[in-house]
Length: 124
Image 1 (cartoon, rainbow, N blue to C red):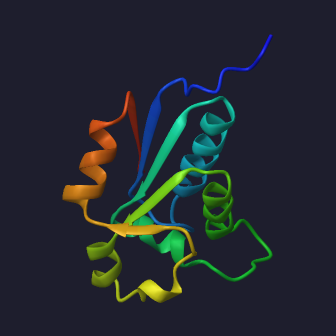
Image 2 (cartoon, rainbow, N blue to C red; image 1 turned 90 degrees about the horizontal axis):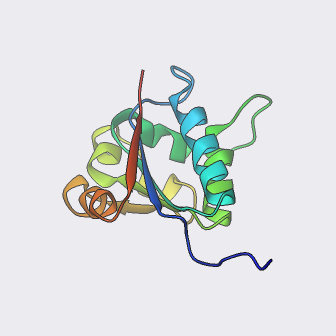
């Protein structure tokens, strides 16, 4: 039987907590990758301290949420982050993982949620 190319639906995942203070980024990214593997269209939005994950660009000897986000981008997951949250935390937009878009909550996240069948929020 041929595998359908049509997505099962759209899932949007919102990550609010930052890496290394919470398991939220790791759980969110693992959920996104598994949902994509199962045939869902997946959006992932980094908000508030969740934006720190996109700035972990160097290799680590331990779990690296930045590397996981790189995998998400490579697997075709739509990853975006709040540009205001990045600026408020003095993070340089040029130092983020390539392929992650910058957008606003009002435009980018609202569009993602509106287009979704399900929305999950990861925070602790």
